[in-house]
Length: 465
Ligand code: ARG
Image (cartoon, rainbow, N blue to C red; front, side):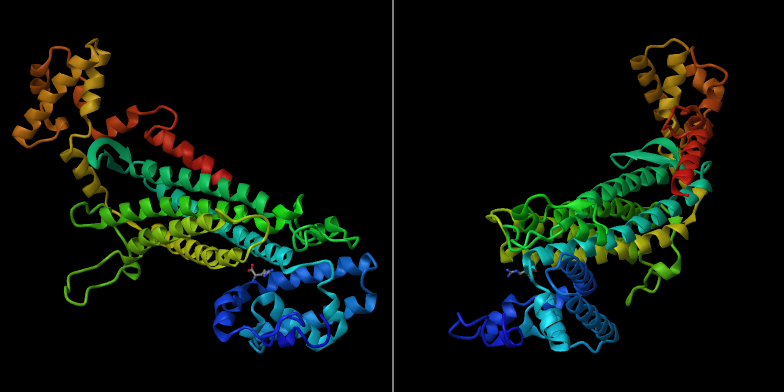
């Protein structure tokens, strides 16, 4: 471009155009309202590109110095809020380039040599996302730590484990929380894996076919901390699979958060009463003075829908796009930004809330007893004495029936009552039927015995240190 044409884009793109863009089209196609968030990555990418252009002798040393000076001023202007973003300059890239040219003249106009906004925007999004990925990795560590520390205090706290939301077998509260630690640990692994594919440099692909200038792509990649370059220029500018993959990671993580949130809501309800959440995470009701609602957990559960929606949006956006770049791709940013914001805020607040949870062991134990959670233990006891499992299963059904008739837990039946059910019932049966006995018995690797929970906790603490 020559003269002040970048500034005059509102009039027309170039001499080729016979009329300016309509105001409606300008608003419809502009992205600067949201993509200005990429400004730091955009400047970082431009400086690396300019440095390489100068090193390759494509622009002069003075041009580079001018560009660096201009970008320093633009950085200061954006940071202070003085920078004037212009809708008629469409996006973050053209806004910054136009200001640069205003500040330093011809050097600013040379910056775009061997580059297109197509490889520029792909570079910016990857750079920005990489930074967010690193921050999210830290938040996932915080979440796991919070869960591990609450677990460490509750290896002997017994609660009912559920299947079909019916009381099944006793588990420790620690064991239950540690299940979520496993989920978040896998999420962290997935995130680290996504990062590898995000961290590749598109610059040098130019509009779609590469460029005729002798660019040193590896030098730019090294300057920007990328692990390598995108190997095909068409692919580099057109695919957003790295972003889709990130949204898949985020969706799975939010689903894990959502399941945990759902359990917190259930556990806090009067019908369970297993836990309490601190007042600062609850809200009241404008009409019912007795209410304390777990809004934070409910919102976290709700926000998972929104993140999964973004995944659907972006993956659908990609489908059917011919190679290479299409303007459709401008639509990748809002879902990506909102996902990062939603996930970060959710992880932060949920980790804090979990760390401050009040556990009510008596209510948990009572619920386990009410649900005959140790019925399997009585069956196992009979099997160990030689009774086939199916027969034992039937004997225990009678035991539960008796318990229900008398309104007591299995452990509260007398030894005589138990022995009357089957001659193979041994003197040690009552001990086997206690919640603690049941817990201790499941001392297989990955099982709910306190010794196993302690081993899990030690492993996680070492891993998260
Ligand atoms: N704002 C555009 C985006 O987000 C930048 C790339 C535009 N390239 C183009 N040839 N129109 O994708």
